[in-house]
Length: 289
Image 1 (tube, helix red, strand yellow):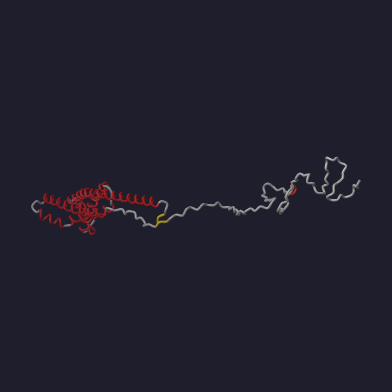
Image 2 (tube, one colour):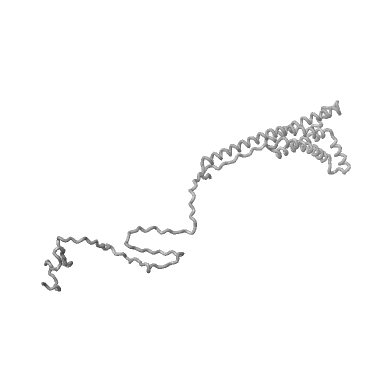
């Protein structure tokens, strides 16, 4: 019987007191081929050691919830692409508007309003001629009633004297002034204007005749007597009445033309507005300069 404390030699059988069915293998010696040990799963060692050990619960810092703490626990190094830094701007970003395309076009010229003063003045000149003819005819009738024998000589003296041409000149001047003032006015302006023209012709003729008779050198009584003499003259009264009738009828003709001028101006303005609307619709949101 061998010493139990002695170290058995390799590749030598070990004597034991165990039954024959059981085989006891020293763990130091090689495993017999007849006995297959169960495989033991060994944990593979990490290929790359972590840069820092995992933090334990006791090592996790306690921070306030209002503050922001960045903590990174790396178990294994992972290649993570770096994200671009996000910069928060205090001001609100405003999306720029798309650029406006500028188109250079000819500056539109609004239609010029046409007036009635030029043609109206010609009408006034024609009215003055008619007024002179009618006035001369009425004067001839008055002379015929006063001096039936010398109508021709008396009429010639009248036409050459201030009692004829002063009312005619007064009518021409005041009618032209009223045409310039009324311009494209309606006929109602000439209804009022005919009264104004008649009054001005009457008193302007009296004043001019007084000045020609030496009104500044006359005494007050002589001037008053001369004034009443001219004011009661049938020729001047007839001149005022004729001036009123001629002015109202020629004024009607001038007003009719003024209405046509207004209509043409309105049509021209509508055409201009239509063309401008078409340009805006054609260019759309592009600015026109």
